Image (cartoon, rainbow, N blue to C red; front, side):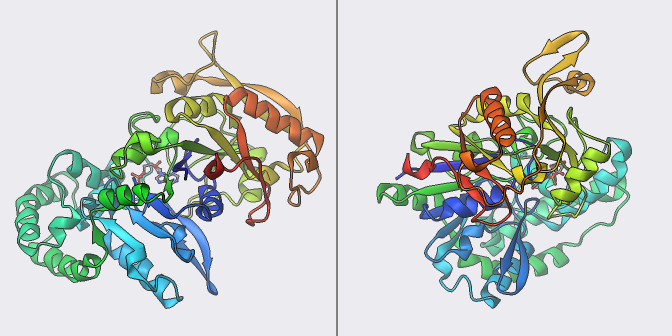
Length: 431
Ligand code: IMP
């Protein structure tokens, strides 16, 4: 049985939710290993549209165990809201199908307030965070002053740790960020209220996954955000605070790299980005607006309009390299239908030179101008295509060329929002 990592190959929002949903059928366990409720998948649950920010959408599939690994930062209020909604709609009847790593870090109220206040203070230099306290929670994790789920479940340890850290947080909030302080009592009361609900989901998830592997069960690692938002490999500092690349699947779950068989990168047939930071192929014109409208490019966590642009083959090649992609899944090809011309960025022009790799320096990338290869578009409705051969010739040529330029085989092409509107070329679980 294969263990497969699915990651975003661009700046997040590549349509991972649909691909993960398709692959879930072949997996016994779905694992989240980084990020927190800055991510989001919109799903239809019963009659309701539900956005799951933390719990993998695998929870909607009978018999699939969902794991939230040690690399995730968890907001207990959001987690409890999600399980309450799921249960109200008849899902999660068996609580043992959802497990939280007892080592994951808890997002505290001061993390959220600091995130929002720091962004407000940063003015034009702001990162454009989701305001969910993600960065400040990871800062405390790396700074060795974070509060883990196991601390929250131990009243004495929780009280001691909150007391130890609160003076520092209140000083930052009041003296530096011009915001309100917290009292110990308000945090204690709120979080002790969450502890009992969280207790029944807590486990040593690394051990659990190890046992599943030994029993011949398969794992699907569901990455959140995307390669260019990785804290090490992304366009720092305009990144999220976790390891979004494939390596994060191991550190964020306690599963060895030797147990990973396939890494699939999801890339939109064009590109989008939310928040600040460099985006060389961004279109600030009517074509960009047309992509935004046709692709419904508005954030599912914050509702912000996403910045839109052309497919960047340098970014794709970079994602293939740093993640070791064994395949690329191209999503939203149908959004390009009707455009007279479609473009792919094949290089950057910088200071009279042509660059064929993404430069590491933010200052350099900010001055890069994209060099494009142009393709004639197609007008046909492609949502019914079941194979590449059923796509218009121009669309086939487009896919072939982005495969060549990106350097990894295309294993799936999504041609519409529905599950059925998908061309599967190779199933990584059957490798
Ligand atoms: P944070 O993760 O809230 O700290 O935000 C840092 C950066 O990552 C910002 O540019 C966000 O817009 C971006 N970001 C965080 N989560 C997502 C996501 O799920 N999709 C796309 N961008 C995201």
